[in-house]
Image 1 (cartoon, rainbow, N blue to C red):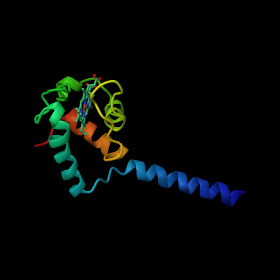
Image 2: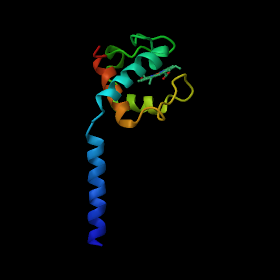
Image 3: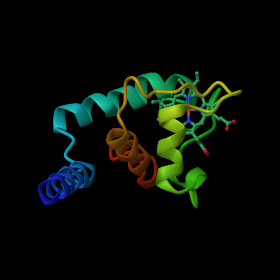
Length: 107
Ligand code: HEC
């Protein structure tokens, strides 16, 4: 029983570690920034100033929590044109993109 609990604890802490390390390789970061411009940009505008989708500049997103934006990126908004990206973007990457949007594109 002790061994079982111990291994459960280990798996749990590994999961926490995996969630906390926002280690997105820089190559993948470049891919995500490209996706943001090309794919997201097709609706939200190349410079995120809006188009079919709303503007995603820091001033537009002010007060919206990163997890809420990440959720929108992962699952889309049913009933709107915002599609889910879960197959292409994992939760860590969605949070990273939400941060990028909240802070403003570094480029
Ligand atoms: C086909 C068009 C389309 C594409 C492509 C698209 N979006 Fe959207 N997005 C929308 C629309 C429309 C909304 C507004 C939904 C609503 O009315 O709530 C939206 C909403 C959002 C929001 C919420 C904004 C807010 O103020 O709450 C975020 C964040 C977002 N999109 C990010 C992205 C990202 C990141 C991508 C690319 C991975 C992307 N979108 C691609 C159409 C699109």
